[in-house]
Length: 430
Image 1 (cartoon, rainbow, N blue to C red):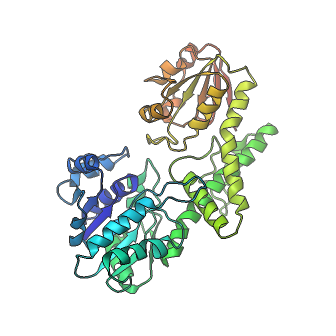
Image 2 (cartoon, rainbow, N blue to C red):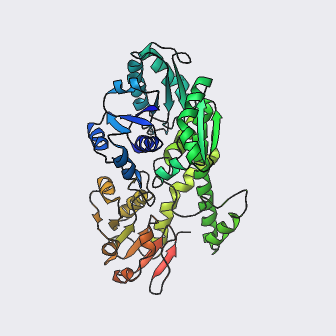
Image 3 (cartoon, one colour):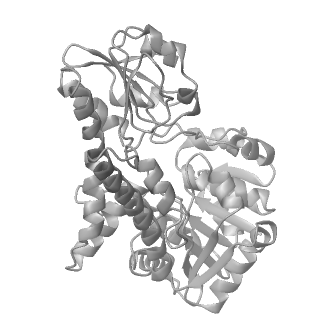
């Protein structure tokens, strides 16, 4: 099929490359000429395992990029994959989506025949029907449900495994209001259903599809925060939280996923999505107390790490290495990384901070330009009074003699990845 995708960020680029891999002809539309040039040259604009290979393989063939919205006219369906960042109150900023809807509507005014517009961005319930569709109608002069339809297809991609998650999903959620829209969505995703390992295909209404994404992430974020809350209690009683969490994970009603207690959750999805659904609930007069508690627990975890350090010495004037700057291993994304509040707290306490990460250093340097960065973990540990592990990169589990170069050899492990050894004043966060 001929598909167009508006937006070439993390979701849009992954979507385009994977659709091309499924055999569709895809055009990416983006206002950023540098990104368009990069995609057409076969280079992915973001760091994501497996994505470079797909972009390089299909660029100039089944995958191309442009700044010209008129390229959409030759496609059957358009996926809107644009950012929906948080406003100060936690609600989502829809300006990029609104601008795209206006531009898409103007383009569709020139098209003869039917077109399907699918929201891929994460938006709160009713957005597609009450914000996106009316703007397309106004700009195109066409009527939704007649000359075009809207739909919703939420993404469940994890950074670091996005390509794998798309090509082998647990579920495919298709939200629409007409049989014609469902038929076209079925046709688009048929190659994926045939290739993947028997994913569940959920057909539902548009606003239900919008809510499924938020409910999915809110549940996972809350599960992590509950695991951390329980682990914090275990810590107070000298109980091994990992043994406790491993045992409860054997209960089929609970499951073992997302029970790894530690420094908390970050990234582009969990913080933004929990804030958005909390704000949306409050806009309707409902106070989501459990979700707010999950956020509060998550916000406190990095500060507990500093408390453990201060039990040993005053950080003022001390050299403290922060190992891991990305919000999770396998990505250079630092959005809402738990290393950020940790570094903030260390600087407020007067510590000299040195940071290291395998891939995220340049991004963190934009956030903290005045702290020291090293190109290896060993260099970060040299002459450090303490090391705080914020991201569970595999290479930190392999550290050994490197700790001998520290001054006081204090290691506070926020991810329980460093192996205890003689000569280290080691403590895990939970």
